[in-house]
Length: 344
Image (tube, rainbow, N blue to C red; front, side, top):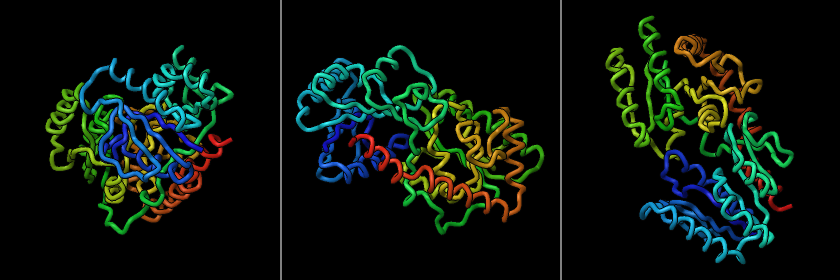
């Protein structure tokens, strides 16, 4: 079979979307030919049976140009694909749905957002199957929706022979208000006032709209006198994060319940203890890793608990997590499930 993939970006260097490069790579082993249409393309290294087409964002912004390029591509390539896999963005199904139905192409839609609207419902109606990972996703209410593994590359995300810094805390992801790094900083202030030893590293960049917020966070660090305990680093490509996870004991992710942030399981696969606000993993992992609420006091209390547990207990909890990720959320399991469904 031949597959058309529609995604936002193909760039293995991208800190947020770089993971999808591996998805395409693994899917290329299962399909005769793959065509990829993306809004923007950067650096990639894919086999000969994969062709990547950009709508042109890297050369300037023009929504009219994007739409024109998209329609020309899905029509021009129509003899080179049998099915369509749309990753995240419903707009592509809204634009191409009628065309694909006329051409008798099956449509598969990956959507993991908590909220949806009438346009989402139309995109779902066009789709033959919808995939999600979070039990709080909007699409879970539909019979055609199927839960899928998150897709962690176990070959890369694993425990490495790297010294893990004692009492080390990590925040890794886009620096924005939805991720609530300000709550973590307030929690660190509480820990510091209690004279608890720790070191915390923030890896990530803000979007242009969050530059002011980013500066606010840095000023908070100065205000709390945490300069010697907290470090900010630029965002790194997804393939560089296993080393960073392996250098830290605790990974804090305060993204609220809704979509499923895969960094949680990537960190867990690398031996970190995740402290999370997202309830998607409730009943799946140690409940002591899931925050009662996202208030600074609750975050500080949970971090303090995991800093103080014995090394034996932390190692045992970490091994259980690694096993959970391996058995339930590996990239190989995801690709296998996707292929079985798409090739029916």
